[in-house]
Length: 156
Image (cartoon, rainbow, N blue to C red; front, side, top):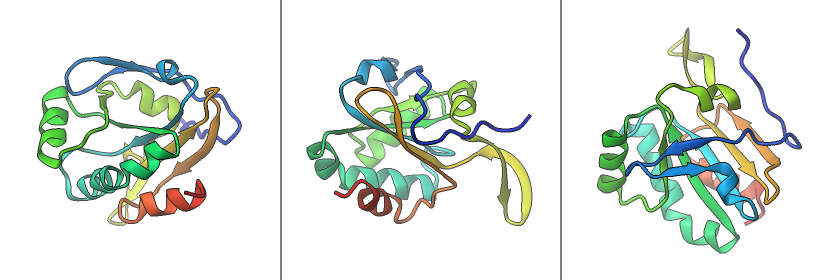
């Protein structure tokens, strides 16, 4: 099965996922706001911690420009809770255990890891405008320096 590949200008697939405390967050709840949805492989791993802390450390400027940040992984709620507490992450981390939202966004599929092709989470970031339309669809992003690259693209 070929992975979906979303592009700027497409409607962002809506979803409803629980956060670390079990509270549901739907993309449609954020209509009227700009949303950054990022998919990461696993809570509390080195690269994902670097990326999450990078979002945390840039949250004031992102929020100041009107952006909400939502992190999505396949982790269970207790792992997300621990990750958020340990790293003082003040933005929602959402659990997509069945990978349905990952698949809808093309954030799960074949990727190269240590020279081998494997199936897994593709580190991806999507910027959704106030009307639910994708402004940016970025696949295979790097954990380190990602937020800086994103800020440049968003002209922040």
